[in-house]
Image (cartoon, rainbow, N blue to C red; front, side, top):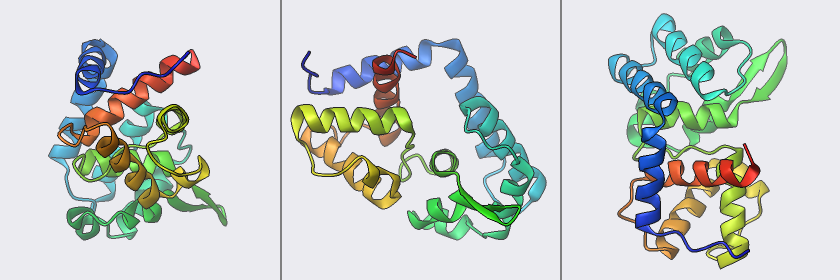
Length: 189
């Protein structure tokens, strides 16, 4: 079966389906409230609240939310988030747990995206797999699946996706929702 080229109408329809799901709608309203109410990342209590809620609602598999919250506060990320520094994703992602570094890449993209959805698109397994499927079907860019775990490269590929299919006017967050829903459906989840 051929994968049809994505269109603005298809993305709008996917976003409408996403928002119509009461679980997604409630989760997104909750996260919007938290990240708007506590936009700074300097208070451990506020950051812990954002980390724990994001982890629970988006199933990011952070097993020690307190350590992650402390790491974010210690990393002084607010200026970098504000300037759109894509390197902040890797800074948040790499956390030391009991003398071992763990990379929480998907969580970090989500955390940054909830602060600045206009700059930081979300990357997870469903999105990566769908981008690879579109690459195979439409050859919109040259990249390896592994390259998508490098955040600046992921953003570059996502922007190439938008450009190739003339979706530059579609917000990154809407493109993400589309790819996530399409990837989830393709995986049978």
